Image (cartoon, rainbow, N blue to C red; front, side, top):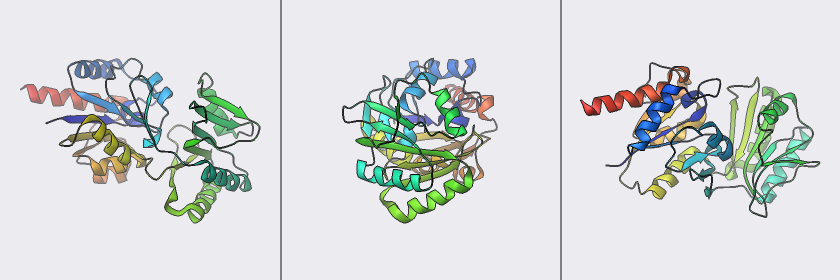
Length: 278
């Protein structure tokens, strides 16, 4: 029976300094080259994910952008669930009334992937933009406008103002959009993200199963945080790293004794193969 292994990136496969240890590279590449179906599911963009994973052997589609997009191992877009222009324009206007501007990430009318931002950045946004300064998708706009396909609209800031904005989005859009609100694992702030209702890891995992012909599949997932919960609920084996949030551990079938900084995922995979060989 086919088996898919799929891991979150931040605080799960990646170390806290955003590196991949030599041990994890060795284990992953050895298993992938010998036919194990390994891939990732992350909130990060396709280009950034491929950059971070450039030393890993990738031979299956990747779930990126919180599940709103599936890409090939070459970065080609295979699936995109996006919010329309009119809805995104309305969301932008609501944000402006709260004096908060987001990042808008998606596909423009020419079919080009864009990462739009305005000049009115708060310190947390500026810190993130500095990380992406070589990203070819970046597009500065005097007044932020929606894209043709708005895959992800991201607000970053302090908890209180973003909570007020989240509440208004919920009142305005209801279930027409997916709203995610969480503490950022690296910055001293919060993320408020607007996605298509099918733009989460659970829907993306279901689509990936169909793409890969996993009708009679078994799936093992690894994760640490809130945006992994839908994916956990779908999978046969749900593996939480030791540093995972309590809510995820409660629905996990196994909690690893190691953290992301201790190569938890790679150690699990190595032990799994050792047990199968014995």
